[in-house]
Length: 473
Image 1 (tube, rainbow, N blue to C red):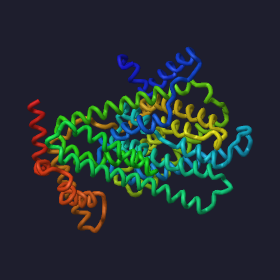
Image 2 (image 1 turned 45 degrees about the horizontal axis):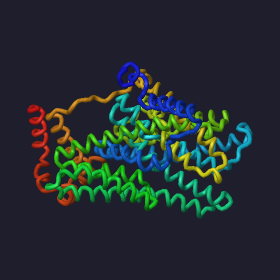
Image 3 (image 1 turned 135 degrees about the vertical axis):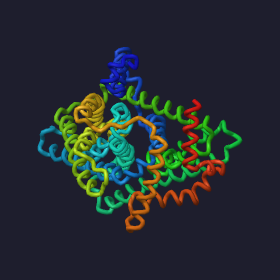
Image 4 (image 1 turned 90 degrees about the horizontal axis):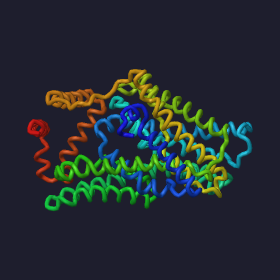
């Protein structure tokens, strides 16, 4: 379908892959009436998700990400808890009225379902938003939220699953406190594991000057080790590999050769793209299996309504709070795109498949609903988001390299703003960034970068060198 630009301009690649998966799954089912292929949680979490998250972390625009980290964390943590709680409680409240008919589920089952259906999928978001080309701030907030939201969702899911396992009658105040504490321990622990392996990778890459050929191997192996280590320690593996990629990129790029850097870049992009393709195709193939389907019209429709409505309410309320503290305000148009960008994907599907049918009696209903939600958000919202962005005239990103003059003035303004904040006694983004840069230059870079890389870090000379290379090419 890449040969037809008319199709790919209108329909997102993720939606086309799901349809292709449905078609292939239908052929396989018609041939032997057995669902031979399925997207299993093990395949997804250990082999398909890590390269996508690593690619997202390693090529993350750090300045933009950390400049908007407060906003991203608010949407990812508070927003996810809000969506999970309101969706689960609302479905349970409607169930009590009898509209859904008889279901073998209690409050904890609905909250467990609410936690997994709140997973905004970075794979789906990235696939759609990269084609739309919205402005950088909007993209980094939506994408950053979806990336960290996954980690929060998995932690919430594990907390509610443990509550379901011990039974509602045994859930006490102490258990709830333990759940809240574990939420923070798992999230922060995963982040620290990622940072540790990022520094380890940076340190290792400092001493590979005479064995350049193994540099790309170290990047992938140590990054994947951060994921496995966090998983073994029951910490957030997604956060571990994300922050491993974010924190190591500066030092690793400075240490390894240009050939190794190119190899890492294209291999990582290839693996991430391949994993995305497999995920969406397998989502389509998995949906063909009739054994996993249990239909309840009221439950499915209400789930779609609740996740959409509470997404909008959550975004509006949180943005209203954030705009009191942000210099660059998030306008109504941005909020519409953010609300519409809550695409669900393979993370929610993998989590719902993990449910134990002996503990959660309505597992098949939850699986069926999740598939419908994923298909609706990826296909319908994916199809309509590009026309919506054009109709709302959302500010789009400019694909051009800043000129030397712009880079120099930008750097000068950074120093001026940090000086103003320092003199006025305010601790803002510019002040903190300046302090971090000084700490990095005096300590971290000396430990994690080889000396030749440190010497060549003069910014003006670097820019001049880049321009000379472009002229030569």
